[in-house]
Figure 1 (cartoon, rainbow, N blue to C red):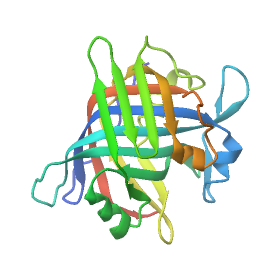
Figure 2: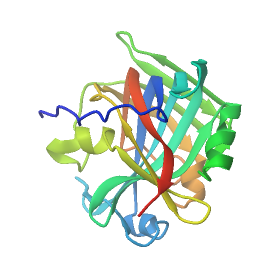
Figure 3: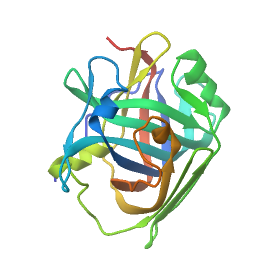
Length: 240
């Protein structure tokens, strides 16, 4: 598959930047109808046809350690902490992106998106470690999540076809439920060069509380990378 990524928007003074270390996307198959019931009008789950039969949607817990996170308009103060984004693959009026149910952050900076912008962010204890040598491995321990994963041979994630890399790893538009309306923001990052992993244990209670994932459910896929750069186009805005 030949995927060159997306054009990088010119950084603006109000954007943020960060290096994301021990970056891993843990995805789960979910019933599309159950996911659809959690989305606002105009949004729909992306549907995938599974090899075992039937179809459904996908959600991902994206865990990583922020390194040198900073707003471009502020003096450069290095912020390092764990973060988990809980998202679903959706379309809005046909345009693809991800719906953010929640973000967990292990830093007092969580007050900025939560109180200033009304985003669904919460302060959570998070510990993430990764080994990206000959025998890759990744571990996450948080107040409401645990995951252990080890390296495996490359595979094609079920139901995604030849375009799995941009679809699963490269959504650039996100939406969330704000205080009064749906909010949106975007990101840019280079093409992910994934290390393929398999979970020996994975539990993300946010998805369980939403009724999307059963305790002990096997992930659809686990993809990781030692480090990747992100531009974050903030502040978010009310979605038109």
